Length: 388
Length: 125
Image 1 (cartoon, rainbow over the protein chains, first blue to last red):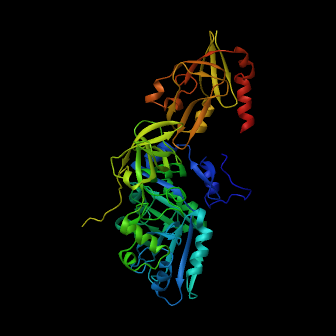
Image 2: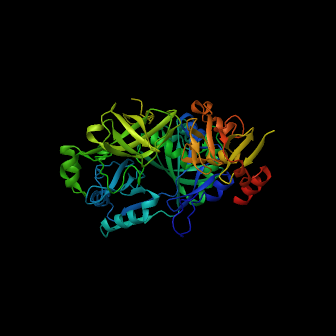
Image 3: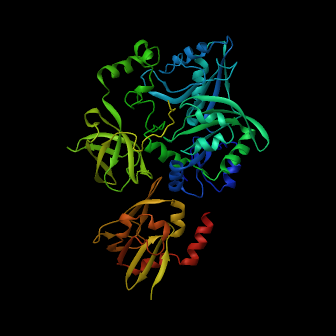
């Protein structure tokens, strides 16, 4: 692979040796050497997650606790609200929220998950997960925004794995029956016994595939034991970054640095739902003026699903034209959707061309290919909803 | 009597009666992973040795396939249009890409035989 940047040595997650034992194809990603795929291959790995359950190493992502010394959750939540437009103050114990760190133009510095811990005695703790490529800058920014009485503790000794797919709940409930009835976007902190070893995990019912599933933060020293035990289940396969990307693309979920970055706002990228109602009224986050203006007048461009009509995938960077031949946007993520059985893409187009069903043209290797604006997601979400 | 040659870009060409049948090697398909799309030129196109002649797309990325020799494209394998995955199953037989009528057979001398190619792959890894 040729996309390695600079001479900085690549970092390894605690599961690095184990991936090599599994014969993974390792590639540089966000400063880490990560598994692109296992011997099963991207296509079968993808389909396996949609059908059963897949196990992903995402330990390259940044994890931290924010611990207010005054015992008040709001002390940390208020400070975080100066960086991101989520309604964090309203988070109940054990609940999780998706948000974005913004710059003064309303552009996205990173997207992140913010959780208020639910464990007794720790309900004032905040747990954040950020992208690997941005974590150094994110943590510096978050630390600077916190008052002196909030400690930021970067969790360098924690691994993070995701167990995703319709069978994920049955597999994980074999170790911790409490997870079976967890609500979507909720979390638990609990001990599990794996092969006679007791270990702690922070588990949340969330993920990046569009399927039901969990993300598990486990001490680095324990993660291989847990991974082996989960993977021993007949419904579980190890899944690499290749399938993670095609799964999230079919699910219409944004990838930072591609679909969203410092030049795109959450309004343009259809993330308006993640901005709390109170925040839309009161502001107080970076770029609020720009966000308010876009909420009022509508953005000039929008992130949409794009379905090329033929078999040829349209990759990131592909120019998008309206049927009258004028350039109207660009593809930010594109490839083959194994569950769709054809090419799928996301990209920005002028708002006038963003309606579902609008015909577009894509310039692929000098040729114009027909495409349609399609509502996202390409594959329906299969998140867990509690039975009433 | 046919003879098969190999390139450093991982194409193979089987030459018989002045026509070369071209595909990618089994090693190449393994490296690319699951193939989802193959773009082939229309018959009649003249290509120079080293020109980009076809495109093969895996789930992750697009890769070029270069013409191992110069000549006129006389046939493209239509079976790949509906079933690009055939490249993963039968890269060096059923999943040939194009046939080229050679315009300069001297160019074949620059290519490797099977043993030479296997040695080359070994040296690359």
